[in-house]
Length: 271
Ligand code: 2YC
Image 1: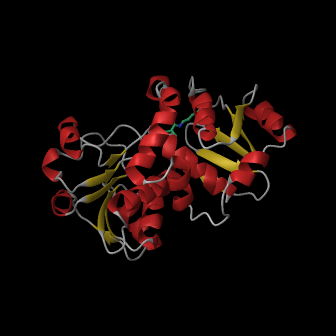
Image 2 (image 1 turned 135 degrees about the horizontal axis):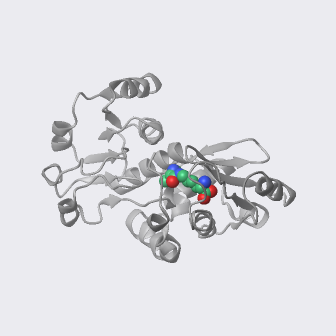
Image 3 (image 1 turned 180 degrees about the vertical axis):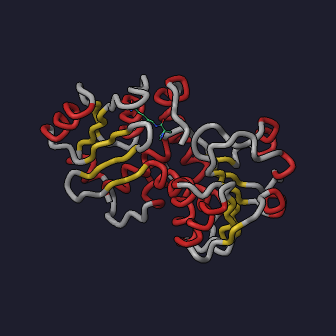
């Protein structure tokens, strides 16, 4: 998992309103609606939850320590969906105590290895990587008009790839998975037997126009793989596309640093 730096997230908060609108214009759904689709939300409108449920973010000082702006950015992303959220005054255990004393519904916490959201009532635990995969797969489904019977090339079989595969297989896509560590691709196929393992992904990228980049690698998607009909879901940083792909792929790309994954975590934790 790529560790964020403060300047990776510095521009997110002031762009949230615009980003949410662009998501709606591109996919016909807001960030919250894409997330609800991703987690198969069956609880009707979430307005009642907004009124009653409070969300806390607890800064965690372990490992590389607090990332300046991280908790505040998570708070702002949650609040763009309409929920009330706050960053605890204290970090770590004292912050957890503060959140519980304020009887919050969901607690977001992240150390260097895991980023989760905990539901204090039903014990749901939403993992950022798995839910980022699901949220981005739901976005690819919406951008493509539906993944049923379509082939998707999934590069990366880690937690993000597993989340993506769980959504895509459930929605009838034919998933071709490649991972530089074959045993990770085999582990993903154990979870989703209908998935096919690729021994290399270059020809698959040339012959298919739906791509999910679930790797932390740079520059693995070159412009010779991109056509006018290519659609790409590429969560997180670094972005796996080479720079000269951008004028070709244009807005047929779903990519952000944290936003869609965090909102999908929220609705998974609430569900
Ligand atoms: O400020 C804090 O509370 C820090 N402990 C937060 C550390 C987050 C580390 N994780 C990451 O940078 C990446 C993010 C892309 C989300 C998942 N991992």
